[in-house]
Length: 77
Image 1: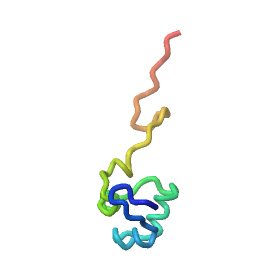
Image 2: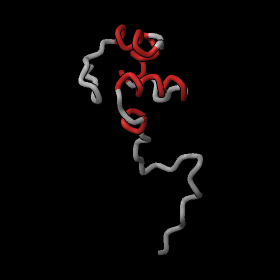
Image 3: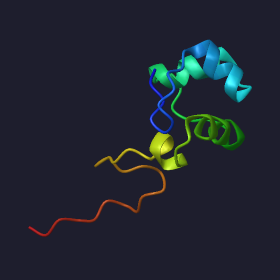
Image 4: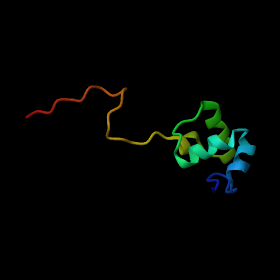
C-alpha cells in the first residue's frame, strides 16, 4: 500500500505500528469489508499518511436515497 501523502510504503503491520491501531481493522478498511472508522482511528490513519481526512473517508456519491434523505419527490405526469 503506497502512502499518498509522504510516499512511504506501508503494509498492514507497519501501518498498525505507526498508528497504534489493530492490523485487523486496517485490513478490513483497506479491503472494504468495513466502511467506517471511529473518529480517533480515522485521525490516526490520516496522520500517518499525511493527508486530509476526506482523502480517505470521503462519503461516496450515490443516487440512492438514504434515511437522512427527504421523501422521494413526486413526478409530474
